[in-house]
Length: 502
Image (cartoon, rainbow, N blue to C red; front, side, top):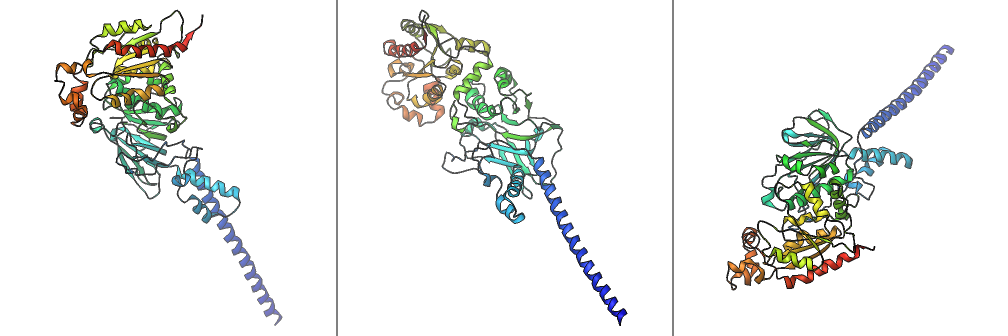
């Protein structure tokens, strides 16, 4: 009987010991699994790098529709970016996984947001340009014109095809621009292996095409949008360019070097797979030939752009300052092709009588840009008939004057949209002069009762090609100097504030 009681006591003790051991083992396994999960989460967060801002603005298209395929919310930039749009449901995931101290909660949320940075954010809503911003493990394969974010969204793969040239609203310009494929690749999917690792350097992918070769379009379609997009990186960015116009790169190399200190990569036919942590495909563009500082990372403006232009060519004059005994210099652009000033010498004499030293100059096909912009910067005012030559205002000293002669044909809106707002944004004094019917060479081709004179808007309604043939391609002007003289005096008076007292 005593023996039986001892055996039952031993069995009870053994069950108790086994229960304690099993409980301890369960706790150990639970802690271990949590620790492994925690380490994996930390590992994932460690190899994702934080981007700055996407610059997405979610504006409506020209037809009022919102065409953005993906959210245009900003990547986390410390400036109020929409974090919920970047990492949907981060708070709810955190709450279900761990309910402990606020410190632990913030750490877990940061890991989830870090994971959410493996992202593509495409803004297709802007009427001027399409832009995709990519952050994480980004791979550029030039030969296939494909740019991939690896492991961006587990279980999700998306793709966009965009033309990275900042003139989206212009079908003629975009017709021959090559498309680039931007896509996400889910974790575990096959992706091209990196052959060139440049993870410390962001990249900007864009096209040099469309209307480039026209001096105005070189700036409004490429150089200014490139400044808007790339200036935030302070030179530490690589340009990946789709083009066959290598002469263009040579022409503007001094400017390109101001924006990037890295070698240019040519996208087309590039066999390498280039890996970056951040890539922007496409160039931001705000308005014709100008910049909206409120939409630019860092608040850069046209004043900053013109400063960079002067730095690119070592131009020293940043103000039109002269001593009282010196005449301000007026650059008079003669135009040898269309829209010529047929009484050029008479206009030059009127400018001299108004107190200017007149410089006649126009860049030709063989003119070195570096030489011509020095002439521009040496002047205090610029005068010319509407055309690409007025683009040189970007090299005038801040505070100089720009006088645009607008040809006959209700071209005020077109002409001012090109040079009025942009030159004023650059800190210049803008003036213009509208040519009358009697000052136009069209009076030698059409009777005065023709719609060309009586109803110019009817010519505009026939389309840009017809309007351009009539009013831009086949019109010269003979200025009425007596009517024009007050404008010259106004420009001269403006420059008096920059006289240096002896």
